[in-house]
Image (cartoon, rainbow, N blue to C red; front, side, top):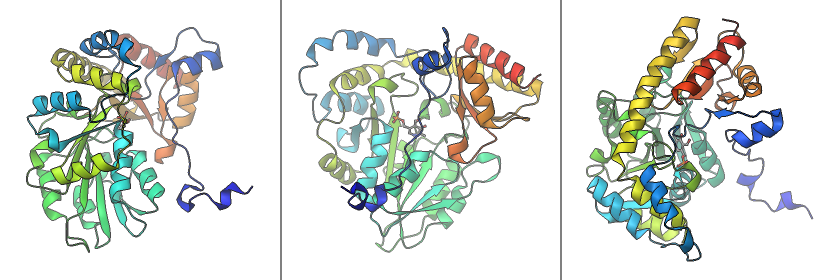
Length: 373
Ligand SMILES: Cc1ncc(COP(=O)(O)O)c(C=O)c1O
């Protein structure tokens, strides 16, 4: 049977997402006892303690289906952000949110504007729906060029993706830049502004930066705006797959109708409801990351490694004498997992997640060995 002949055209030739390598995988492959993972921007302090406690108390209820409406989690989010539950939706990770939005809005005749060197899942969602990606270059120093993004929108543009702060560059756009961008967006052939999909996966880190805009402040005046965040990063719940978004009641209503009925599992719902109240965990993580970024910047400067200043818990750096892939492979052998940036078309660069101090020290020690510093 020729399966290829019946596959939807947009799925044929689809390249799978390359996920960060896991610790177990590398232990097995290289016969190593100790491996550290600084590859997927997880929280190196681990999960919120409040979340872990409710998880332990909840295991025996997993034989029930989860609450399809994520009622309790939405209520917790509503209290935390002082927004109506009718403006909130939940999903199995930011990855699912990107797909839910794509399924809802993207048609084959639509253009979707995205930025170069941005999160790779956007282009994949566009491809899956058979729409066209219009890729806009970044401004210097790997920053989103929001002015160019607005200019890049045409009558055909259905939506624009904005990541603030951006992965993999770690850079962010200011309130002034974001406000101007929303204003500058032209009307499309439907007589409306394109949908702005604002990905704030690293919001809690970037909120410490000067003039960083909180996407929620723009919701009321911009009915074309969808903002989403995740429990995978600062809350340390990546393995549970849970994220949340904010939009107008009408958009949320459509997302609710088109999502899978039990997309957020029971354990994810209870853990996330507890994690969102764990201010202490967020503060401790922010403090660690701020301090450790300074350590890494200084060490990079000492050995002459170029890096991009980051508003997140990861840093993009350029090992001067070797390709990113080469450094990635050499670090793997030493039990340090980072991320090569080939799939982002940045073959000379590497992304490292900010770890605990002892992990960062080990990473620097190995980098120095590899680069012969
Ligand atoms: C910018 C950005 N958006 C979305 C995601 C998806 O996160 P998750 O699906 O774990 O919520 C990530 C994960 O790395 C990310 O970096």
